[in-house]
Image 1 (cartoon, rainbow, N blue to C red):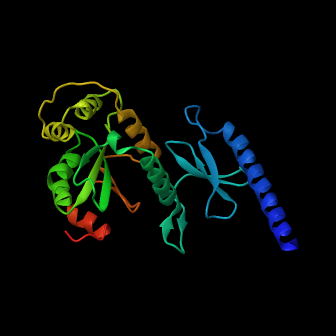
Image 2: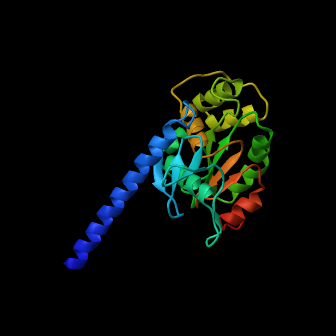
Image 3: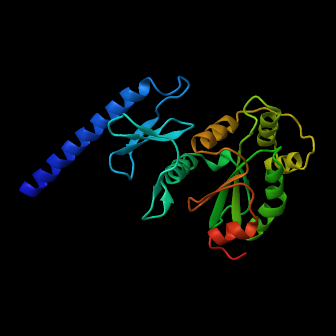
Length: 237
């Protein structure tokens, strides 16, 4: 019983300490970060005395005193991982898990053992190469492909309009394929998740397309052949 009380007391002290650190960092950052940025969350990192500060489109590190900030990469030399990439991958996985498949354009088998999520832009050359060269091989190997629409030019662009039209089409896959082939598709509007896809990408660190997220959490920026994706999914093509 004494041990239990001691553990509870220790946890309470640590919780108060973390809360005080978060308050202090929040106060210090108030006059530093741009007005168009807001603190989304502040959490302890793997580095003692250092916190991860999520600003939405950017993630930085802050020391517990709030006096010093670290903008850039931080590496765990024991596990040999980037703490920033690890955090963004976790955040991306949570965001994708919140999406229903009805909010994506799906190719491949419904009951697939493995799937990938691809942030794509209709007018992106390497997105087209991925769609016509890589994706068919993945589908043939039994991989489900979940497309999220991510117009690189932003939400006030022709690429955005094409993305909406493809999503709102009766045959989404065919419309997406035709648009990627450079064909004109019927302009359509409907309730659509393109803006949400775009935000998820921005918050998750997507800076270009294609951006591929494997079902095991691995993020692959840029075009890659099917063989690499299959290898990282441990699937024999």
